[in-house]
Structures are given as C-alpha cells and as structure tokens.
Image (cartoon, rainbow, N blue to C red; front, side, top):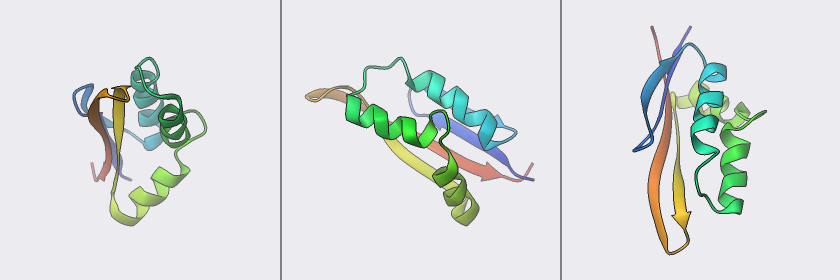
Length: 90
C-alpha cells in the first residue's frame, strides 16, 4: 500500500496522506477560495475537486507523480504555484 504526499508550492506544505482520497479534499479546500480565473478553476476542479482524481490515480499508478501549475491572480498579475502529488511506500 502506498501513501500519498501532496502539496501546493507557497500555499500548502507537502503533507503525507494515507491515500489520494484523503489528499484531494484537502487540496481542493486550499484552492477553492483563491482568486483564480474561471476557466482555470474549472480545470483544477476537474482534477482535484469533488468527484475528480481518476486521471491523477492513473498517473500515480504509472509513474508515481502528478503535477500541475495553479495560477493565482489576474491575467496580468499572477503567481504560479505547482500542485504536486507523489506516491511513497510507508
């Protein structure tokens, strides 16, 4: 059984979770209130939001790593925050 380590650079320190199902709601709660453009928010919600995670699980099963960059702010003034999820043997 693998544990999951997930974090958002500059927003949430990498944290170890017992499973992807435990990590995704925490990540989504950290992302949800941030000022993110609507289309980008929709993409992130599909990835880590409620009902998401199937694609991430497939990536983790193949290579043990999934990552995407979260862009917070307005179109001309934003900061990049990679969201990274990895699997580890306990």
